Amino acid sequence: MEETMKLATVEDTVEYHLFLIPDESRDPEEHKEILQKYIERIMSQFAHMLAPYIWQNQPFNLKYKPGKGGVPAHMFGMTKFGDNIEDEWFIVYIIKQITKEFPELVARIEDNDGEFLLIEAADFLPKWLDPDNSTNRVFFHRGELCIIPAPRKPGAVSWLPATPPTIPQALNIISTHPEKILASESIQAAVNRRIKGYPEKIQASLHQAHCFLPAGIVAVLKHRPRLVAAAVQAFYLRDPIDLRSCRIFKTFLPETRIMTSAHGFEILCSKCGPHFSDSKKSLVTTSPLWASFLESLKKNDYFKGLIKGSAQYQERLEMAKNYFQLSVNRPESSLAMSPGEEILTLLQTIPLDIEEFKKEEANLPPEDDDRWLDLSPDQLDQLLQEAAGKKESEPISKEEKEQNYDLTQVSESMKAFISKVSTHKGAELPREPSEAPITFDADSFLNYFDKILGPRPPESGSDDLDEEDFECLDSDDDLDLEMQDPGKEASLKGTLNNLKSYMAQMDQELAHTSIGKSFTTRKQVERVSHTTNNNSDEEDSGTGESVMAPVDVDLNLVSNILESYSSQAGLPGPASNLLQSMGVQLPDDTDHRPTSKPTKD
Image 1 (tube, rainbow, N blue to C red):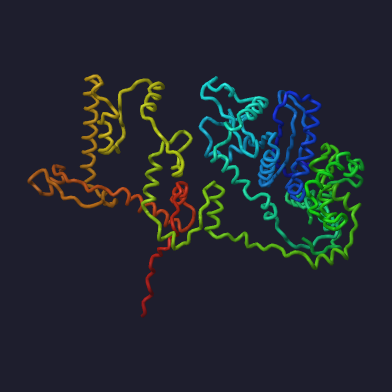
Image 2: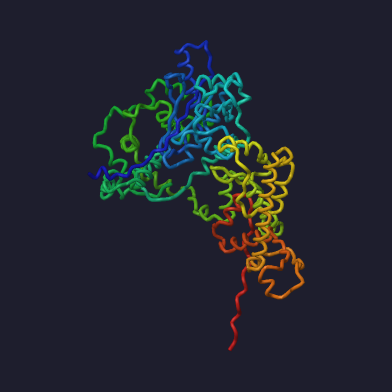
């Protein structure tokens, strides 16, 4: 009953496929042998990055996958990265680098969400590309992201299939037309932004902390640093059954604890039976692939000129053995050791020199502090902009930002936003100046609706059209009245005249209300009286007219936005969110209202 209460987690998985450019001269057995050699070359060449990397769940790995269902034989890997999304993007970086080092290889990568590379670059994708037609279109080749396009019309381009291509078709297109399938620079930049900083980013992601641990855990972590991820996950996903093993520490005695760089290890070991299968204790060095793999590591300068037998050489050798067993010579899941079994195996084979550990305790590297958690508002904004794909810019001082700020940018951005065309997918935000502007063909738009709804007489129910709108309707560019039927022409002119009269009547009625006082006008215009009688009764009856002062739209817009922004008190709100989405950054609100001074009695 208690087993059913165990916390269930959804394991996020990324899959990656590496294909050879097709060569009809190769027979299947030769193809298989070539792919296996590529696996060894790739894993040894990138061992300097992959071996020391601490994975959240599963490491990067490759194995031979035979052809099936129209998909040719290729190299395949799958990694469960759990909650650490950086593991997935590190794999993207590795795949990209593999295709750069081996130009005869083509790679594709996807996860539970499908083509997650397209999701990352969603703001820059062409209109025709959507999840329904993106199958087998996105690849890495020669270190570049490639997207196989779709023809505008079936058969328009001889080498492009009308439907999503098969894997063999895609490989053939990539090999024959590599320059025509490169993704746009904006799409490439969106993906490259996520993998920027590797491989240096690996060390920057590590955090040093000092804590007291039992000597057994110190020895285990010394040989298998990656097991700390499994211990953290075990403690994070603990349940009442797991905590029973922590009441009495059977495997790791608290009396042997020392300071080093925790319940989780005890939980891992508690999941193993007292006599787990010895068949899983296979030695790495007995594998026929180990000798050739070790030789490849030496050729790729994995040991960095270290003297054979030295402490550092042995440390890298143990790391290579662990890496080989997990990523190169990976056993079937039924034979693979669990983290708990691996820990118990290590405890049986490695010596525990507590005195030596205590000597190392005195020479630990300094632990990292938590200052990286204290981000200033500017640093946080910069991180959010980078995550949203904004272009990086030089930091601007607060004084310079306030001095150089132009309030007309607010009104111009809002006008640009309102003038954009919105669809069923939502409103389109103004694009960057470097991007192409949106064009709108009014004739095509009207013809499109005519086809759906049928021809209809022009109607307008809007009550906010201004004089410029009527001028546009009267112009020869929009409606060629001379070509219209005389009856329809007269009807249209009558409709426009009625609307003008209706709008003028509304203006006349609003002129005698207090609504106009809520807006800021450009300047007052002299009242014009259409009658000689100026008594108040006639004005109240509406026989007198006045020319309303025009409203300063820009000034009212900016004033209202600034008032809304000021009321946010530095917190997120509608004004700042809307402006930031349009690329407008307002300076901090430093206009503090004066407080009344206390009076002396």
